[in-house]
Length: 505
Image (cartoon, rainbow, N blue to C red; front, side, top):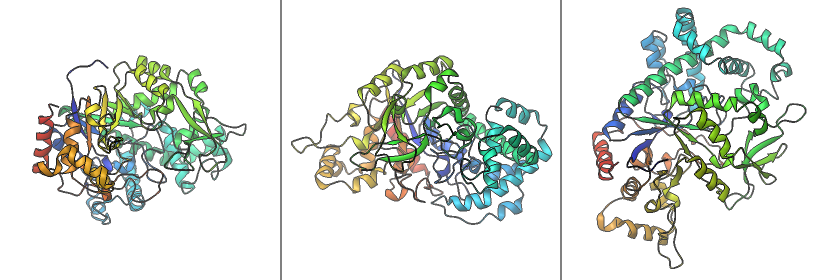
């Protein structure tokens, strides 16, 4: 990336965290209000998490599809305006927490209501030219995804390669054709929901762009084993002679986990992908570029090499580093999409090879300020730490922390006294009468990084209760944080705008 004077500021806030009525943030009026808040705060970027439909564990990084949108994000209020949801149905929505997404409740009442709305849409608009054009343009994934969802609901969301009838799991063409014929209306319902998602999201993106806001999306490197991708594109993955996945992804043992992390995602057979000229990947990128302006590539180091765990293991102790497709893969994508903008999540176990691959692509890497504070041999703050904001290069995107980190306030409250004292002295917290949130956010904004993105929780000064995710845990606290209504005040807007202006972003 050519060095110039552009330095942009943004906010990290997933759609589910918006204070929309109905128990989960969605693509209704609150999304437009948040864009207005961003613009008035002088922010230029809105970073979100992956938009795909979530499955077990509610993680957006384990979506049911790499192409589909999460139906739970469809605004029921907008559907009411379209005449697809009645006033009585809106009024019957059960009361849920304002501060937390209760996914079980969401799925139990929202999905049936959405399917009902889809039925009404089909009755009125099945021959709508825009709808027909959407189905044609997305034919490479849409029918497979919709069929997958219908079969999954038939078998209570049980896994396709163990619980479904064998002929459907292995996609026997005669059995699959018979099933589709028998369930054609249900399959069409899910297609209609994908169209409604597409319309609502693209209206939001268009409005954001009109207000000078670019949206940073997110692409997980791997797909979930229980996904339409894994079911319909089995050739992409390493399998045994019986068609079962033969290896899975994870992270080897380290200081934080003696067993490592077993992610359980099937790993790619990169040679097969290369033989197809990376067709599936290019379709995936093309779809995401329709939805977002800039793409964050998750687990970037996995494209250089990744930790492969043989099937049958439940931990990551046994495994090996396997080469990925490397910089050549990204050069191929850049040739196919010359105007695409990518940022690389190059965190974790970084090697010289990963650093070289990042340099070869020219992508901005990530910098996390919470990793930047350590003591040197004399007990003073180590000013050479590359994660300290004063050391960031221009070609980078920086944050206090990501969705996987604690908030600034939560992190600071757990630091040992000597490190906390050194940080306080470094920023002059006592003498300047500023909080650690104010000082660290200002430092990040003033850094040289091209992009500086602050999680909404940190702008609100919230503690660990607002943490979005704790890696390697499965808890209903993960992915559930929601911003309370009324949080985006004019005073907060003015403070952010002043900080952005002071940093010349």
